[in-house]
Length: 345
Image 1 (cartoon, rainbow, N blue to C red):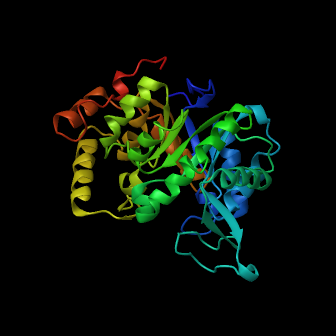
Image 2 (cartoon, rainbow, N blue to C red):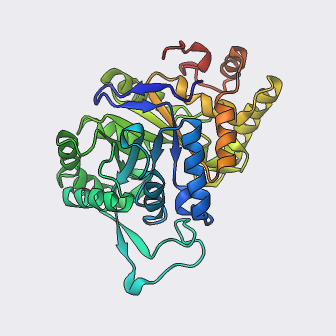
């Protein structure tokens, strides 16, 4: 696969690179990331031809946006695509208190701020202004509503959904797109069901879907991806390693994987061994075969990890491997596979 390939979001016309860099680790996810290491990562990504970068206010409570913006501010602004997210306002801690170590959300030595959920019109507009200041950039290309959903919020979901619908949150997104402040709008979520609900409320350009269309899980194929394809809404695939279990760390959905998931991964790994395919390579390439998927964003911490991911992305995988997964019930029969994708897709 050519890293310079681009796919268009039909609703907005925005051209999206086929591979992007996720910048959560830049915010200190699970362990600190040295600022010089973050700079080297962005430089290595740029040198490799990556031109799509994704961040969020939540990542390190502003740290990821600050570091990414500093690394990109002297690059040609029309030369890259930038996405960030709304739904949380980042507020200063009382007395400027700082957390030492890893906090309850997994951020190592975060900045002296904390997130407050706010999906209202005013909250979204304020979040965008704050992000522009942290980034040091005058434009955001894609704006995602971050972490909305019933699984994410439990009993509070109805309250937050009301803020997006009756409270004007979705209206704010439409205004920002209409006024040219952003080129595209969407959701950045772990739940495809809420993205399907959102499509009844607003014309989304894309959804960043984390962990729900992967080599391990394809429940989103119908009806969600079918509807995306029919309506011109595109998917940015994230979490393609399902929190790491498809890359060897034993985590699934940010926790220890249950036995049935481990067993399925072992079966996938056995098939990979049989065909001399690396499991992470198959996991990285699989989502991009679906015609509704415009891009795949992967999170890495340093230039070495990035180089490994890019090698996986470009590793040839025989068509027989994908057919074997389907014949063994390890892949949904309806799932498009890389062997089926024409070169111009």
